[in-house]
Picture 1 (cartoon, rainbow, N blue to C red):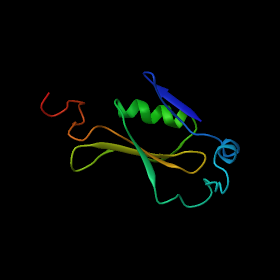
Picture 2: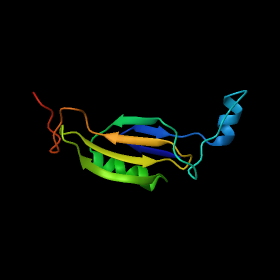
Picture 3: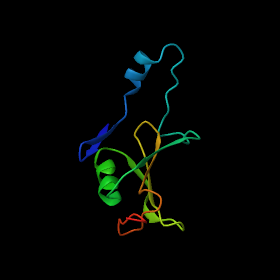
Picture 4: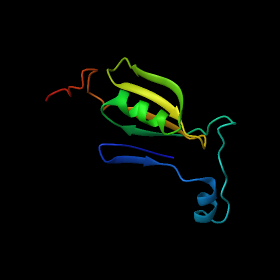
Amino acid sequence: MQASYRGNGLAFASHGLGKENVLPGYIPTSSNENPLGVELAFVTTPLNKSHRSAIAAGTVEIHPPVEKPWGQRVSLVRSPEGILVELCTPIGQDSSGITEGS
């Protein structure tokens, strides 16, 4: 699975490729099981477009973009392989996209 926006890309390797590259002891994850206790976080703007792009590329929405009490906007998706991926705006950037101090 691969998603990209403005030349920035995010890709997940298949389980077959994982088995080839991580020898020995590759342990696959699954979207049918509870997610692992880890997530990947990617700072991105504009968040809504990145979130839609990730869903179009095959992720499952866990929650849509929401504003956190500290002003950061965050969404969460899960890859077909079961990996949690947080998409978020930079800390210190309000919902208008303006970074504090700029």
